[in-house]
Length: 322
Image (cartoon, rainbow, N blue to C red):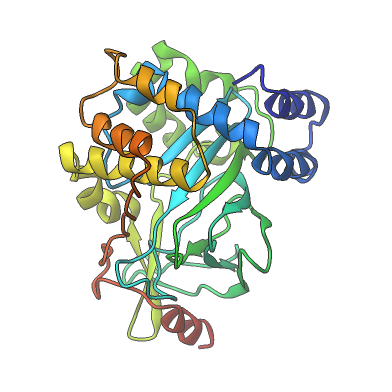
């Protein structure tokens, strides 16, 4: 979507503004404008539903349903879709407390109830033996209270399941421009990713190069205290959840969002059914859209990969007061 006027504005800002915090602050105004433009959404839907890579994506429960907007070596813009629990229960955490390493994330609540979130102080320690962690809550708010917010690099935060289907427009970028940024998309270096990472860790250059730490943790609450669990261990079960049911779940969520956003280009939808790149499981949702039938909600996971199976907002608040 490089030709889109909003996307082009962010590309220009990226080129003109070196400081990444200033870039995010200035670009956030464009995120708001694009998300309130019906033509932008029509273009996003059509762009993704005619992209062979997106159409034939093999989804897993590790990722939330999303739509691409634009990506380059310096930043990317996407649409993330968040779904409620089947009970529509509030204050239930969607995933463990986590950070995004050296990435800055600006989020705009574009549709729906939005979610509740907490940001934590960046200075904390995890006991290497017990994994107990002294996290401290810095801010606690909802997206209705603050539709635009920035999550800093290395800043732990948590997302709470919304009470209705919600969408955010997100801008991601490393916290600073590095000479190594363009290497992420180099196909030769991608093939050498594991040995290169080992070499970087051996020299203690992970933060300088801008990659995840050797041991990255997700955090949860147990018996009124915060604990860390290795990210790979935490995500292993959901990364393994894949197949036709997960593909269908993801695309149902996308089409439910499209319908709620008022997408009504029937001729485009009919043409999708003749496109050989469109998987057959899409047709059920295309037909519902054409017929004007309501596409039902999809729902968030009842349990997450922590000992108790779930974390409540109150659990975090109590642990944060210790």
